[in-house]
Image (cartoon, rainbow, N blue to C red; front, side, top):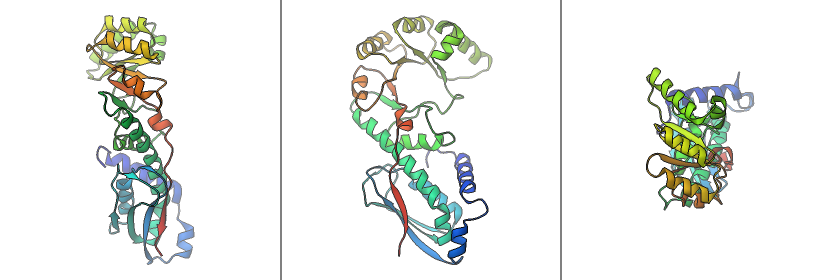
Length: 284
């Protein structure tokens, strides 16, 4: 699972199993012999982009290191109803112990990767990058951002700690954009931090204030009308990176990209992604 920290992954799996099992899977303990072994298949019952096969293998091998995991489809593959992603041969109790964690996570991540692929393909011939946001499921962000990458879009910042983003609330609380930018520069210098700086602007007046101040990485043009967005991108030129946000959906993203903006941030990659239907069935 490229780019996913093992420590986060282990902590998530341990917490999820603890939530589901606590002192035991009493149904399986009651009716399945401890020595019983089975093979189960992951059946895709939807159309989209699969994400989480690597995750499933990790979970089952964590539960039973000697289990046999055979994959037929890799993460990032377009799938359809009836496809078999993998088969797992292991203790029957282990299969049922990991079943719901694997299914719930794969269904969610596959929904995100499908949404990511859909947005990315609409603008694939244009010099623009589709970015995700922090509008993610608490504690599942690291996996949802992995699914975004699988789908073909890109990650923005991981959190509040790895990128400076001066938004409208910061500006309003600080008094002005210029004041906010200067305070950020002073803070980074004082604390010896090297972080990218994005400044959100709501109109051309705020844009001009940012350009006068300078010393930032990217300008986020929030909820600009298309003609105003194109004008703003032209004003920025190559001095700073440009980003569009707000009002971005599958119907508008192409026109937004055609304004020449460098990046488009899309909260819908995660907050509006559905789930792909799947099931894990023991082979009779």
